[in-house]
Length: 135
Figure 1 (cartoon, rainbow, N blue to C red):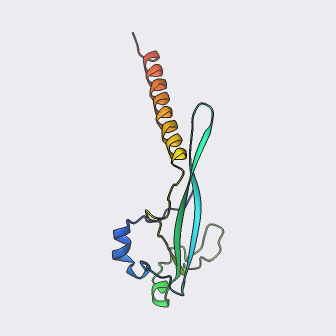
Figure 2 (cartoon, rainbow, N blue to C red):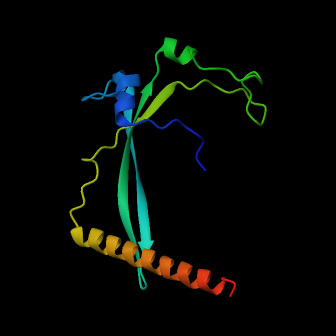
């Protein structure tokens, strides 16, 4: 499981971190991406749609890095090793132009399988709730 991190909307990032909303990548920043898959299944196949996520990782300035809060335990992790203050800020910059799906038949099959799966779950739930009723 991922560690808890704050999640901001694009507008919140623009307000709180305007220095990271750039058209060009500053020299203290690197661009990263990962591809995740959203999968569903129908009766005879598993259908996965890739989803690319893009992140900017920027080295913090000295003043910003010094503002890290040291925990009450003196900055030790669970194994007793000293925690190093984060020197980078990572912000997701994925937008509506990042993922373009040219293969509309894949998306059609995906959404059709999702609808079918929802119907099957509803039918299953209805069957089980009727069997569990006291008559």
